[in-house]
Length: 296
Picture (tube, one colour):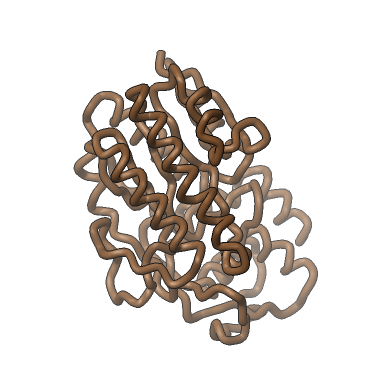
């Protein structure tokens, strides 16, 4: 029996990961939402990590625009928190899986970012997540795993897919950005991938390294919105492609967020499915099916 601690368990990915782990044999999962465990408090982290075999940190400051106004706050959660977890794991011998982001890159590439590509964040959120990565590498080089994800959607918290479905019921025409490219990733299969990585880490099959946890293939936000409309039986011509300049926000966003998946082979794991197949599966689940039902 292995004991897993999932921080940020009330969030999109954390909730799905707890669900996945609870359905696997031989695993005792401890769910730790923010109200139970504040990862910025080192003493509380040490107590929580004690007697755990695997720690998956899904806790994060995810308000990208808010980080521009309070970078120190974002740094505390996204950098100090992972450092606390890594230090606690170093003392107990636990494996740490730190969830990170494509925002550590500038988004100016023309081909998928490899895991060893230089980080160059263009906003405060990205800087805080890059610092969290660096802390895990430095403090826990032998048992620290980094999983970068991007364009995540799911049942909990803000979700582009859910927002598009809700907007379709409220407006006839929707303007969606067409000059940003990425890999729409459903949180549930990512949770399954992280569970598999953690298990491989425990057996020594997976080396401590950086892995890119995104769907295969790529599209734009406009392409994703059209795919959602098509699968919901709606007319995609109701969506108008616009540039990012139409949605001025405090924080700059990477224009290119496509990540390379070749690193999974070293862990004996295959990359996740294509984003379209993933979207089809997600829209068939009760949460999204209910949103689709409102459109009928």
